[in-house]
Length: 182
Image (cartoon, rainbow, N blue to C red; front, top):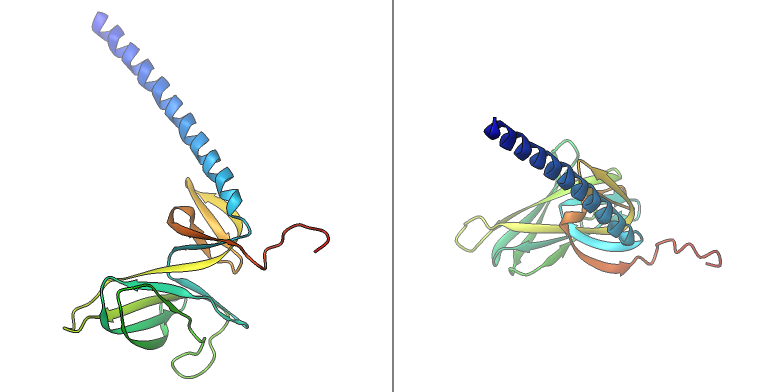
């Protein structure tokens, strides 16, 4: 009987701890979302590979090979995963580089406006494959949460997880300041 009471007491303590931790988790989510609100109107850089094509051009993607490369090719994919263009970038160092697609498909026609994805294929001087990381940028206009993950909505409709933001580059020059005189 004493053992059963001890087990019941332990169960009560674990249940109370679980409820307490659940409350802490909810509080952390609220704090994260509240903190993320300060990103609205700011330009951010985050790990990713999506770009946006509009009538005024395409957004940049920043790429960093893990080492010097003899050849790098940027492959642009549509939402269906089909390659719509490939751009040979030549040799590059293992530093960060900027790639801006001109919006032209392999057949020479203009691609439709929308979201595209860029993958990089890179090789060193010995023909070995080289890993390439990429980042994207945009202006934050909104915040959502999904399954406990805070997601930033960019002005062109792309979404990036707050977790992957590596830089806040300041207020966007096109951000609405809310000033009635502007």
